[in-house]
Amino acid sequence: MRNYLDVLQKIEETGYKAWLVGDTVRMLEMGIQPETITLAVDCADMYQLSRVLGGTVDSRGAYPALRGEILGVPFRAFGLRGDTIEDDLAFRDISIEAIAIRSDGGTVDPFGGRFDIRNRVIRLTGDNVDLIDADPLRILRMLRFAAEFEMDIFWKSEADVRKFLDVYADRMHEIPAERWGREIMKGLRRRPCRFIELCDDYDLIPYFLPELEEFKHIQGGRVEGRNIYAHVLEVLRVVEQRFDTSKIMQNDAFVLAGLFGLIGTKTLDGSDRTKLAGHLVNEYLTRWNVPSQIIDEVLAIINGYKKFYKPFTEEEFCSDVLEFTSEAVEIAMEFAYCVADAAGYLDSVRDTLENNRWNLEQVLRRFENVKNQTDGAIRYMTGREVMNLLHMKPGRRVGELLEGLDMAVGTGKVNSRAMAEDWLRAQVG
Figure (cartoon, rainbow, N blue to C red):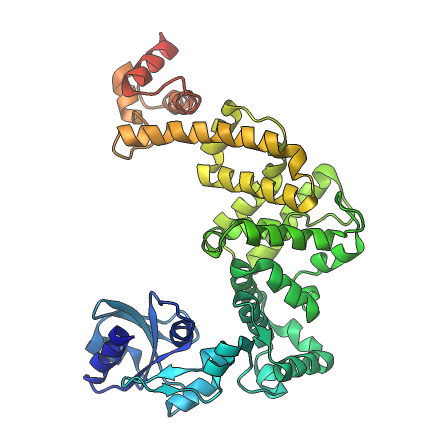
């Protein structure tokens, strides 16, 4: 804490009043060390502040932010909304995010956020329907925080939300898809199963993923009496149990595959269902502003995980790694474990999965050995080195030889630079 207060004092030496706010104060109250601190500064012009403090102004969000570093501490600073810090905190929708710390260490907590943190309660700052009416997406944000921190929702906030949804449900249709997507992605990164359960409890799923709502009326899987919606929840629950939060956060594709893995199941089977699933995944995730690379990874997982329930050779793993990257193949393998566990047939495929994992590890070990021998290069030889060795001109044949060499490395036929040269000579000898 002392270091953070020094940052505030350093800023105030320039003539601008500053406070720690938002996620920084909430994390400190929860005993978590923030890597980057969030500040509110009594300065309406972030560009003017940047000339004094240094750093760069990021104007992409709703409010310009100055990003920089003071006393070795990375920070992002926003101008006060309103005339006072109390006014600024009143703009924040969740009480645990509406706390500020002054440079003298004192706390400004007009909505009882510290009390709510201690009592593990999520409370809307306004405690009235008008606050929700101003931005209905606050409902999803409230549920996201409740899921992430495993907190209960304050009874008055719950009553206000349910009242709003009873009377003004159509307002939810006015929320742009990209805003839905931003909050949904944040909710899925922490406690995906709990987040979806809370959305269901407040009848929000039809607004952002109606196909998931339809799963409640479709029976499926090996667990008797379980509908497909329950199966999706179980997959997300297994993901929560199998991986810690940091790993889930690093792999958006993993949890999205759990959410969308059975999309399109309602009327189609086989290749037709796969085609529809791909269309729906693209449609939703594009509207949610999910990067195209992650969308491709989601589709690769959904379309590829089932093959790991049968014996998979090193040659097949090598081909997949070269086509999709090692990370994508590893994620698909882990997803196969999660689906089998959720569906209740993990024991019947465990040996096959373990043998496949072993084969994958051998392939990855061999590719890693190349990097260890070449100071980080992904191949023993570059295209130009191949051309010099074989006295070849640039062309498709060089690429084919490099691809063949990759397969030879991954399957253990080549494990040194000298062996790579011998293998290449043999291909044109």
